[in-house]
Image 1: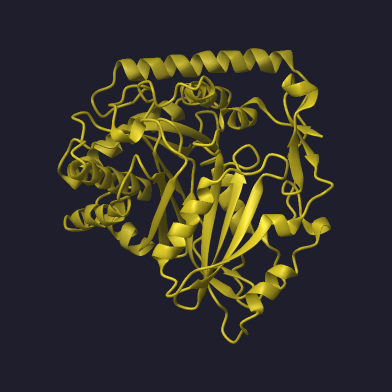
Image 2: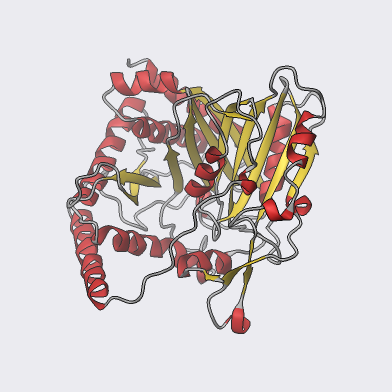
Length: 447
């Protein structure tokens, strides 16, 4: 048995019918040339042996002592792969609209707690001789970044490779067992927490309008109320080369462009809804960086709150404001050492998790307005058993107080946006895709 940590357990405790706590990924493939019509069914049918399902997909949650102790992962002795792996077919003509509608419905349903917390849906009949694979996993089992990495791990850059496993059949290393209690490490961690929090407080105290953002320094918007259990998923790909050209010409990072496009799209959307606040929206976004005491680049991960500058009408002005806000946040993190960072990250995350556990999220001022995540991926074309990957779209969590989530990933020369929202809180979500293009086009006009 492996115990869940307190953070992973919190995702189980916070979950309800309106707020499923799973993430997902939609992979779009083109059929390999020359395969017969039963190829897809036969390829996945070869993976229906229960003993071939690998950790952690063969584990389920048990609560000892009537929930008086933390839950544990245990092997599911009654694992049925045919329950977890399901087939769907789109009605003709199999447009992306129908595919996104199906995935919206699949992403809205909770995972069954008496079984391993995952499902996979093979989707046939996608236009253009394509098929798709949608996989969802509970956040307590694999986080969103881990889920996307897991999906990528089952792919290959070799178009001739065959007999490749499905994600749930892929062997992967297990995490090491927790170390025994170390008093010196505990003291160092406590000092790290205090150091990180004090630096954060100082940065917030001396911030300007688009500088370092603290939790709860956000306007209340239509994106930050209570959500229903219905979901809407929309997605779109842009050539990564197009984004790179803009970022290079405007002296910005890819992430700066992603945040600026998101801010511009949200400004346009909220104007459409007659709901644009005077103050700028705040995004929670993950960052990778090097601590002050490290010689290795990009070996630490944390989250920051950044201004999306939605009160500004110009995309170039928005980009400069986003760069300033992200720059302040990164300077703060780079000034911390490796002992301060993980504790600081946990402290910053507390205002996000606690309202969910207390069942007050969506009824109080939001910690932030929207999550915008950018997870870079491999630069080469990838395949699964000879089928070329044409899109990889992330689906994250929608929760009370956070009715919209934007997650971006890249594979080859494609930058793929996946947008998940509460259908009631964010009507006509497809307009966000159009507005993302409008924001990018305005930036291109300045190149």
